[in-house]
Image (cartoon, rainbow over all chains, first blue to last red; front, side, top):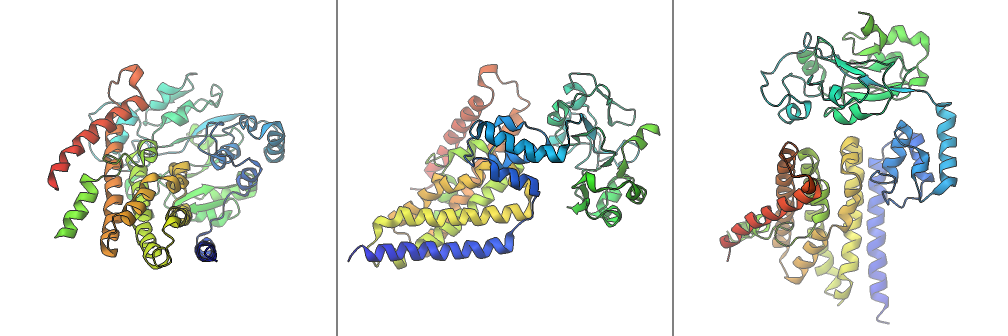
Length: 268
Length: 191
């Protein structure tokens, strides 16, 4: 009968720990993008990394963002790839050209300086010491993205912000990788409404360091709560397709101009 | 006083990464940025400390009284895996970017041999409860120190003129080796 005690011990241990985890899961559950969740379920969960991402979950998120192709998963094979493109295809509705967009309006006119930076003139180097602007999230303005672009599609404006020439941009994403602060991001070319700020500072701080910072006031969220949410004091568009055209004027009431139509800025 | 020396020894002298060469996988994998390295260090410290507490209780209250010492490894793995799940849920809730930054290395804390090594070493050396907790905390802080130092060096290395064949993993391993040599200097502190 010696074998009974260890069996009971181990089962009891497992049972107690799993109850603890189940309880914690209820408290700590996070709602996530349901599409990514759906795709993640389709993937083989081998977490092998053959797709070039750190795991199936990361791959699913990249698929939703449109950064990866479904056929990258060699474990799941053609069948999985087809299922995934079914899910994505319904939502994407064909292939729409993507271009890089700049998520910062902190030009040298509107941001407060922190000091004079005399180090290596690349964004990567400046990022290590925090840059020369008061804002720790905004564009550093040394043009790593300009250098990274193989198509000459980005130039620095006089105000020290990168501008993307959308006719030349191919959506390769080199600039997105080059930017140490994630200012650039690929978006479908027909997406007009964007958040032009990356600052996670609280409202008062953000307002102090940059006139065009998102202060997390929530005006845009109230205008269109199903498409825009606040995350870390920053507005975030979670579902662009749910923004109906009649809501756009309401969104454009943004007191700091940190969300709105992309083309407004080019006309100025 | 003894306990304090023991604590410092766990951080500096018997550093898990640089002395025992345990837990090298996250040490090299998550040491590209100081932010995520420190977070990883904190996650490991948390798991190590709680693991030390829970495994001590399991070992002394269940396994030893019932003469089940041979179940040590299995039951410790169970504890570690559950704790890592807990930490994972917590980090995902608190900071999704951090969760994604740590990526696969977060669940891989489960198989981080430094944590298993900690639980087994504490059991093998028959540490008292307080000593086990101090051991776990010290070892975790030691891991955090090592990975944060490594990340600091590697951030600077981004701008260094590294010979082409040594770029990436090569220079990282050389750095780790030199750090281990430097930490070897601490071993004179404690007899």
